[in-house]
Length: 386
Image (cartoon, rainbow, N blue to C red):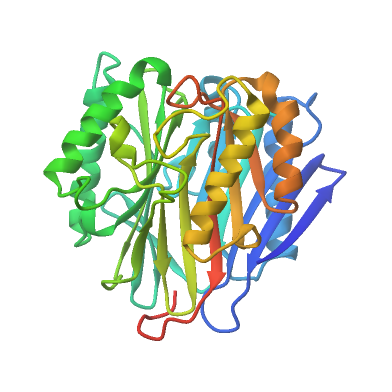
């Protein structure tokens, strides 16, 4: 993995870029853009962030680098989301653009995380964004909400998953066979997460996802939509065209328990082997031990260290290291902990595109959580390249 940082003093932005260049096939880029001048109005921060993003695409990335996924982190979605429309292709209805209220903890009002690939064809069909290259069809879905009334998280999660299963079916896919990653954002996670867990467990079991088969890599975290009635938001990623043996789930049993032992249903991580590389999707990971208990209760520094250790064990299980990470998101329950966590993360993962945002985690005792996406060179001649 190659890394580059870009500081734009005129626009008051800092950007970090990870680059996985390929002489043949798909090159991959992930980048973050953060605003450094916190006193600017949101409209100015928005303009600066997207102007810097555009300059990077023009001057740093390959000409045909196409956005396959973009997440926009806002500090106040109810007042800010409507101002995004002029900056987004498709007026914000693009299925590969995720918009979530999770305030950036550098004090700005907006931050961007973008994932781009070269040589791909992008379109939208049956409610999903379709990214094609070779035999693979990558299916993205972002900022999905359900119209269930009454702020009922269980009903909204049930509807979202049923709709997603139907959309996958239109592409010849299934939840168990093709979905690799979900992000579930829950308004007031301390209150509403139990309903999400119940609905997910039941829908998973109906669709062949159990502790005896496998689950899906995921992050379940606090997040808000501009519409206060949307208690649950779903982002997801699936791939059609993978052969048996290309997907392996990660467990890190020396350090963490199976999630089913404390009542939830997701994989710790997933490794996807292509002919020319590996993708490693690490789920939201906290300071937990092999018995499912919180490690370093109440100690933010200790929890951050154990969280990093757990993530690195998962990466090693997939044959990767910190130098293969393309992007990191860190979630904090208490913004006061940012001054402790930021230097620990920066020192361990220098140069890697990363964002630290305000987002309480699904168990109150967990003070910090991180997820990451890694890409490593590989040679698997039995499989087609990405």
